[in-house]
Image 1 (tube, rainbow, N blue to C red):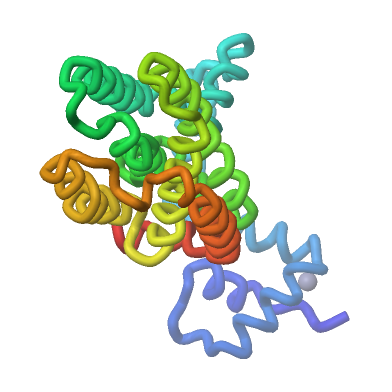
Image 2: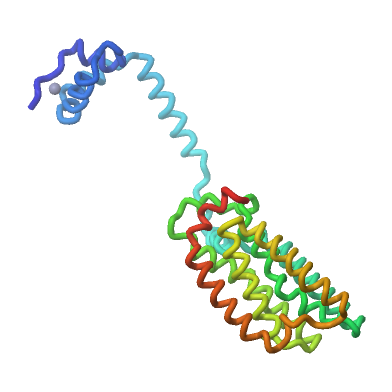
Length: 267
Ligand SMILES: [Zn+2]
């Protein structure tokens, strides 16, 4: 065992004396770890002020711990569910999506000469929901996701699933009224979802969703409405290409999943 530091040295250590050189501080610290007697002497060396501060901190901590309500039992599982699946914040966007699709179906029923608006906008239907599901400022669980290394993939799948679980039945419902085949709407819808997630890992999901919506509207929706006929990309023969695109984009998005942890830099 090393020799005990003198009482004077312990006093200087306790006071944080800058005159005490580094090796001496280290030696005292190492010694204190293994010597109860010197720890007792150090305790005696602490100033009245220091002890008063420690006392105050301990008292206020005790008070705060006593004042904090214990975590609620029954409500907890619902709030966990909500955070994981992110239902609450999505509701306005999902309602909007449903309303837009319903309007498109109604317009299609009224204006029979035009190509189906439902089919034209079906690929875009999940994008607002996906964008909101991934928007940092709207997300109470963001810090949690960003800080947990394994959360990326699970969160990605859960949140996208939550959006699609709503959008797909809505499309089916609207499609049933207009006589459009489900596959014709579903495959482009899934391909666009995967594309938004993949692009999202580069530029942020929100920008990706806005970009894809603008491009599709300009390149496909507007010309189709102007020409009053269905675009080739949405013809029945294109289904296989959409399926292939969906699979490829999904695989690429899954490989890029780590990018979701860096989204804060872009949104
Ligand atoms: Zn000692």
